[in-house]
Length: 417
Image (cartoon, rainbow, N blue to C red):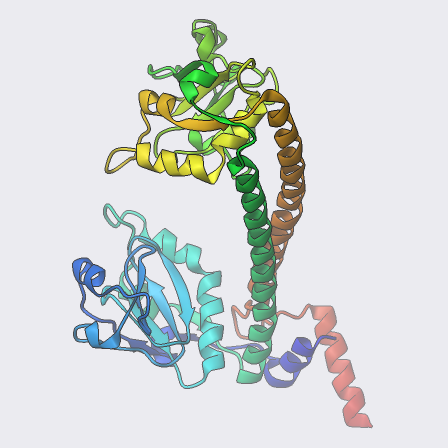
């Protein structure tokens, strides 16, 4: 029997009563502050974190925050508009007064409340649908929400277990970030060295540079995969598991430069611009006009080298300068064609490709291993969070009947002794 089982048997063997949040926690109000004012007081050296709608967060000096209502105790912030979520924070903070927060005298209970609300956040998001252009929830959604509130000893053990899951996931994420940073450093070092390189525009390196067809493609239940930017994953590969289809005749009428072939390089140019993808095989597919296709001239540049060069930090800087527009940044084909890469002799390109491909393979293994591990831990955490917090009705605990029977037998034996 686990320590948690023992605590449940000892302190709440008959189940746990539920309480409304408004009856068990103190509701905290935020600070009336505009988005414009937040921009003015944003200060990286600020000691107060200020949360706004969506994912906007700044730090500011307390003296600069008008009519500040600073929270100095652990609390659970309810993000009620735009992004519907909950945040646990235990350092001085405030928030736009369209949101609210909860606290109580025991910090363990505050953290327990966070896990309970996080476990039910989808309910709040469902309640926010149909509330206007931005999803939002009203105060009663959380005020009237009933939660199971076991004795503090049980809360403490649940919080300890879930904190351990959270810390492990954070450590794995940090490891993955460090590995990616290391790969980026060595890639940029290799690409930055001279090696008798010549700086060439992409239009000098490629036989053609085009984008996807500008006409809306006809839909089909099967046929040729149709790729959008959302089908390009973080590994710079196409996820063919989440695609749409177009009829064969749509593909057949496309110009050859718009039909991907092995060795081409795709490059996103609208919205999430700046992501290169190397086409590894002669697989038929078409793509939206938000993606450009470059066909390298192999007498000038190795196609795999061009992919690595377009993934380098220096090329990303050019992309940021070339991207124009307000709501949705776009890199025009003419601008893309003028962007440059260092082009060393082909034998040097091949050696660089061998090194970077090996680096990428190592990272790909990590990208398979570490993210898979992170995802597994996250699912495990969510499973146990749900199971640990299942005290829905008086008389129900997380123990199975067999476990309860064993616990009762153990207690009877102890009393006999």
